[in-house]
Length: 203
Image 1 (spheres, rainbow, N blue to C red):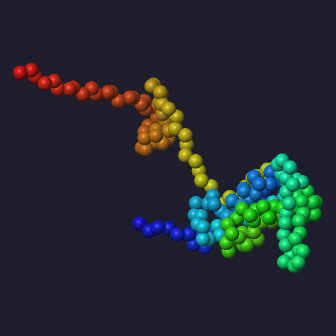
Image 2: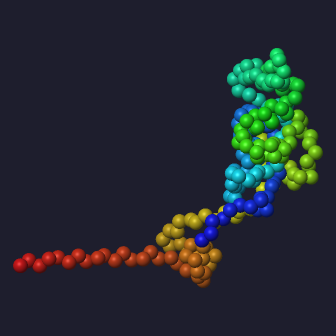
Image 3: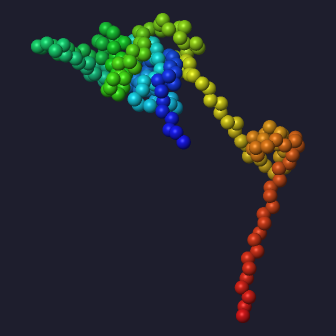
């Protein structure tokens, strides 16, 4: 038996639309990062980029919990003397809310050579309008919802308990036993066979 190894040609990418309106930043960023990595796919492997495209809308309306709106600080350095730049969450939200989403998702991705191409597939928009309507085949209601998922796995029919005196049709009988039977066949419980125990003869 040979071990299957995922190839680049086996990877299929879907498009997902995520509305972050009134969603907590950290919680929704984990969902976005999972889509970009492709961890939910059966052929996922860590050394290949198996993720999908993610379109994020309403980044202006993202929420944070507690006092993070005023206490959370974004910092970066220009690499020049006195080049430390800091901006609180509420000011960054008004200036450019897209950077908040991108930075949160970037910190949740593995720090390797695959992070840059994964972030390229993240499309963030401040409002409801976006330019990827042709990629998204279905209308999406507010909240997290997958727009297109390749392949549909059909679920197995649920098996109901059969009581004494019930009859099963051919399809139901086939699903339970494995071979089709004519309609009206009554299921009978097998009779219990009591084993006789041998007693030792007294000498």
